[in-house]
Structure formats: C-alpha cells, structure tokens
Image 1: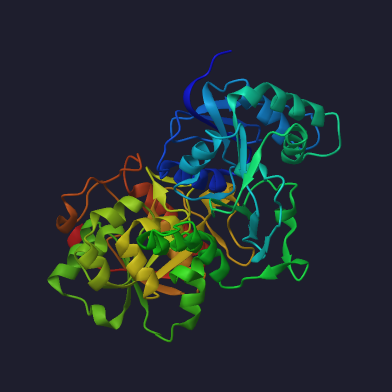
Image 2: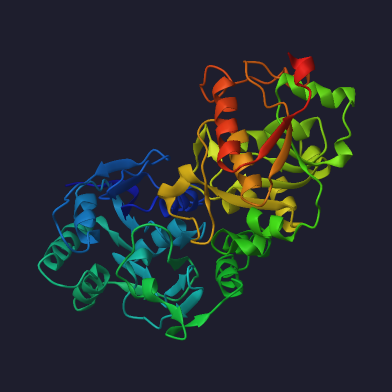
Length: 465
C-alpha cells in the first residue's frame, strides 16, 4: 500500500465524551494540522465527533478485557499518510505536538517523548517517570512503514494478559536498532481520573502518598503546561491557563450551593423572566429594592439584578460585557452550558477560558456553577452536588436552585404563558427551544413550586392580562 504525504492521527476512544471533546480542542489548536484523524469508538454510548474526523464505530459487547489494542488495529487499517501520531482521548497536548513529532519522524521511523508526566485530576496526584528507552503510547509516532508490524504487535497482545502495546512496540523495534526517545520537550501530559470509562495504566491509580506527589492547587500542572511554551514567553500564561480546566478553582469558579450558603441577605427573592408581566419593572410600581432579584437569561440586558442566570452560551454572547460586568452581582450557569438547546460536552471552565467576560467574572468570584440533570451522561457531577432537573425552560431550573437553598416564598414577574416577550425584549426570538408556547413552562413551574412547598406571588399579572 502506498501512503500520501502528510500526517494521520489516531484516537481510540469509548465512553469518555468530556475527555474526547477536550482532545478535539487540543487538535484544533495544533500549529501543524493533520491531514487525517481516525477515531475508533467502542463505547456503550456513541461518541459524537465534531471536527470532521473519520469515525469508526466498533461494537464487541461480549469481548472482555482492554479494548485499546482492538481499536488500534482497526485504526491502522485506515491510515492513509506517511506519518502516524497517536492522540489519546484523555491527555493534554501542546499546540506544537504534531509539528515536533513530524520533525522527529523525518529523522527516525519511530519517535516518542521520554520522561512521561502523569496527573490524576480526581486525586490531584502527579508523577514523572524516568523512561528513556520507550515512550508512552500517548507520546508515540511512527512511519507508515511500521504500520503492519505494529498492527501485528497489537494482535499478539490480544492473546496475552497485558494491554500495554506501547511497551511491546518499543521493545520490538529497539531490539532491531529502530526508534528514538527524544529529550523532554513538554509536548504532552497524561491526564487521568477524567469522567467516563477508566483505564489500565499507572496514571489511573495515582494517589498522593502512594507513589505520587500531591498538587492540591494545580500549581504543578500549570507549570507543566507552561513549560510547553519553551522560549515563547507570551505563550506561557495561556498554556498555564489550561490547568483551570482540570482544577477549576484556579479560575475562581464556585458552586451556587456554596455561594448561597454564605449569603447573609434575608430579603425575599423576586424571579424575573421576559414575559409581558415584567413590564411592571419599567413602570416602577413595585419596590424592587425590597427583594433579592434573580434574572433569567437576557433580563440582565435591561435590568440590574443580584443574580443573573444563563443556561445557554448564546445568552452570554448576546448580552454586552458591560451589562454582565455592571448589571448583575453574580452569574450562575450550568457546569455544561447549553449550545443549541443541548448540554455541551465541554465543561464551563473551557468556556471561561474562551470568553474574556466569563474569565473576568470568575476571577472576581462572581461566576457560580451548578449541575443540570440533562448533563448526567457526562459523569462530571460531584457526589455532594445535586442534579437540577429541567425540561424545557430555564425558570424551572432557577426555581429548583432557589428552593434547594432555602427559598420558601417567591415573588415572580415575567413568568407568563403565551408566546410573547415584554416590549423590552421584543427584538429577541421567543421559544427557540421548539416549544409551542410558554404555557407548558408555566405549568411545570407551578409543579416545581408545589413539590418544594414554595409559596408564589405573581407581580404585574393584571397589567399583562
């Protein structure tokens, strides 16, 4: 078989949607993009690639043991380019990973980075190895000339008890004088302990005091990422910022539950939606200062509120940074914000890094998070955090948040049925979630209030009628 110039990257995966979405992020920022990206997925739930990959769905439900080698064999059959580089689904890669790997592969048919670094984000344990004669699979690349023998190595391991194909590959070729482990260039970090299916490598079992050191604040992880910038000093801080994805407290993020528990304000809550009854706010016929105000979605665009709530990332982008900065005390969002009315696999810290206003709010301690029930498949909810149910409308989630933090009396305005917004938001398109009217949301809202025994008082209803 002949291979075209260029790079094929291969990623075996399965039941790791959050980690895989991050892998797409790392590949998207490569200084040397690949010509082909092969993804082989054997998970129980199908992965959804979003970067134009060549996707192979593999299902062997009755086969026991590690599946990586089987996925690797399938991927190798589809390689079309002269250089092959492994990008594992749960690891971190510097922007120059592919560029540097290709440079090494132009000099040797088998290349890898030694002194592997592993970090378990669940336990905050880390370890750096001293491997200098082999590289971890996540830091290995090879020439297309080696595709057939590497596939045979993977097949041979299917008959053995060990899943570690990287050790076999390197031992096989180093015995023949082939392969080079280059000095540490800080190109990758093995990230373990991510949500989803576990693995078999040492990194998955890293615990402080048990062969690993402790990094409670993520400082070591940030220094590892920053080191990938080399002499490019202006890149050190952005790369170090990636540590906030795995250690979100570095960004200043706090849970809504923790923030609400510390609040000493005993005023009753006023929940503000965009329905017609919200025009009572423009008439100033109620004393808003008597309430703690909780504004849904775009409400903060036109009214100052104590708490702004946005489920969809579009809302963040559609309201000016000045209003987020000056129009609300804090912003509360799901850990997996919605994109196109569905929870995004990328968690909130990623979007904080991508949006300056979210980063600013987080750094000031003004960005809170909670977990929506519809993001449960991503497996990111801490055991001590509740899953907030929501069906179609953000008012349901807002009421759940308030009720679960002690609210028993709630005034509302703008939580109306029908199909229209108040005049202040008439430029916005209502019902982008595909529902026929807000009536269904109002009914659900009252069901939630009754289930938590929250007494409701509607303000401005007479005028809206």
